[in-house]
Image (cartoon, rainbow, N blue to C red):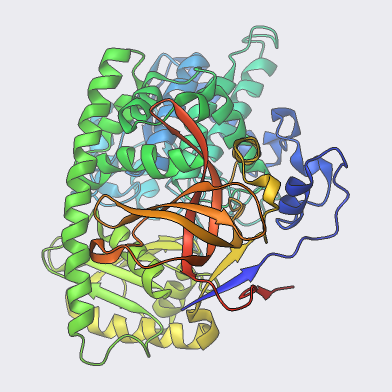
Length: 580
């Protein structure tokens, strides 16, 4: 069951010359003032507002001036990969002569700067370690680095625990006492800000003047990719970073790696958008960390050779295909387990699943699919080493999964080995013998924090479109008026249509031609996965929730509706529920 709800615009002072449809859409996303639409880099808050920036910038600038060896320690997802690439490219541009990177293999070392990773890092003989997209929970790892005489600068965005690492500097907008207004920066966004701070410090020291300083905006293509792929909320700061990065990509000013990933995914560079980054480029980059070694993805983003980038992108594409096959097999296992569950999941408020043959790098994707299907927090587990299970969780609105795990750990000491994450996604590990106890404890927590209404999925729309809006001009206007994404959703609309034609595309997709009941010309529509078992439903008049998009296929550019929800039309229009 899905509730269809209509967004209610806020009172606003948006300019009259803005398209009326955009005024309505922006106001429904709490954009009430024209300054909130300023996507210029000059509108960003200053780097000096980040706690720990002065110490971090000074320590990194000292290393650059001294010619020290700097080692960047990253994470094995797209945010971590782009953070690594931004760090290496940016530090070299700022004058660092010796910069290398190290990413833990998730299957050998797990996540973060652990003592084992410090031992591996020591082989590089670094004078300074900089963590990107990790480190805020690396208490033991930073202590091990300190014992080895290697100072650590932590740059991270994950929520900290009760104790912070004893690092030379910590830059994290979510650490206690940080007044930076953008708490939703991805790891790559934090690192970009750190580079701004280092540039300022070097400029203050007279290493270069403002006219000759490195142009760090050249890194924004990578910042945009990592920010979108990490599914952080697109608050205004992130929207500026993504908007500027997309502008560079569309203008052909991106690194060869991003260009090659877009080409191999068949996405048009001149109109690349956040959906392309999130659903086509991000998964190919993530496939390296999920299936093999994220170093492949980072090398793809670091190379300046178009030929090498193309070769690495092809390898990433093959890994992504392998990932999809593994995921489908695991998804089938999950579906079977849920069907065979004797007590059913209808009355439960959480879902936890484990299979001993599941792939550790793919469990998060399985959890995500199940969360979307059942609208419950889901944790999927795979075997780790020595009787340990690795879990990856995905959550729903109103259930902060990282805080929920903290609640479990507090109430049941010793149940979890470690955990961390965000409101909507988290990772954890525990002993296999504690799995059943954890399932009960997690369900108990979900029972306290969630009520029955929370378990019903909701779909939000921006109301109806006027007949004159069903055209390519408005579709292109919406496409360039974002960026849209998590926390700043792409516009969705609702309406009734007559079905002019319908046919099957692929195994279970519907290709439709629809005519708005309120008038207007026919328009093409695609409904992915809405022809189960390859059967075209008998549809003559329908109610749909849809997005108006540009379909650029084989040099034919038309407006198209992407159907998100489809049902036979009600006797009277208006299944929506007005929400305050």
